[in-house]
Length: 433
Ligand code: UD1
Image (cartoon, rainbow, N blue to C red; front, side, top):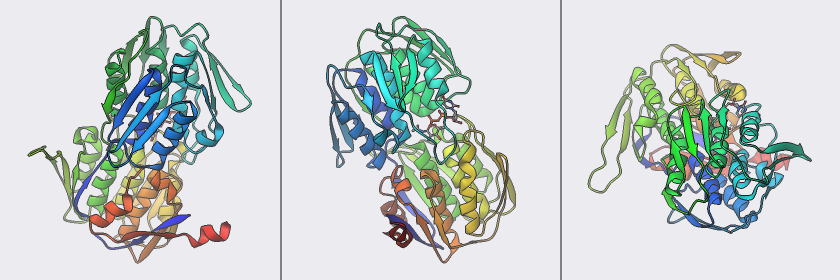
């Protein structure tokens, strides 16, 4: 067990590149199951979650080769893949649930262990299940597994989502591409990762209308063929760098970052006093955006919402920024109930933060004060490292493995930007062990 050691007082300066998005790549890997033969995903981040997904696909009978140097994953899918995903993998990564739709479509039956609770709140699967039922599947929970069956195939239908759930949209979409007839998903999620998944499915031969809007129309086809697809860049990692640059009064060029996927988040930084510039691709180099901040940030109110709203995954970053900003801000979380667990850790660093239901009031201070804190999830971990940079003295962030799930080579990238962040064994974890 390791922890991060963050020396406060640094300023991020230089250039970083963001890879393909974790939240896209995992679904693209699951989508490969829809066609027999070898599909390749390009710009795959070297993170724990892609390794867990690779292992899951191997256990389903796929040949999976992750070439980390080339950042590609090749997935060779057999004619008849397995159809059971065990609890030991689903427990480690909730996103394993995204094999439900494709396996049901391919095999006519699937058993996926039901994920339990989570550090960012209760995460029900009712919309995934009712969507698949609308397509004609029977779905039961048996001995801790979600067991879905459609022995005679799925049939296109109208599906309404109560909330534009990313995971439910993806599962229903991946089931519908091989269903008989037309499926319409209303109130579908519009995240760039959904658009990316639609692009890959279309390359495989799927017929999808409305990608990026809240109505997806899918015309089922008999079979799909393998493909090669480059993942969309990670907007959450790009947004993390943008907020880190602003709060440390730094200057960072985020290569391969797509400003158009972060409109509201970057606009908040401009209101906070930062300069944000889009950088065009030139001379073979990748484009991106640059964030510069020359003074103490001004506090900014934020409300999280599904895309194109402010991403819930960036909530820890905006709380950390506001904790050292000039003024007070109200931050409202609308997607995951327990995101504010992060606030108690931020308070250990001296932040003046107070929550009431899904609202949080942050009164900015000049500096925070370094202390040992714990990462409860991927984004909270990244937010605490950023907060440690604007704290006096040393901050340690335990449970580093959470951050490893989402931020490839994070320590090296931070160090290349000129700040003193390292990893060390966690003495507390050794005591617990
Ligand atoms: C994905 C992302 C996660 C991001 C989230 C919202 C991945 C691997 N994870 O998670 O990083 O924070 O989108 O942008 O891509 N809900 C239900 N019933 C359901 C499904 C969802 O009530 O059947 C609720 C959830 O509890 C949550 C909200 O809907 O409150 C949004 O969840 P959802 O969009 O499904 O998030 P995930 O796909 O799990």
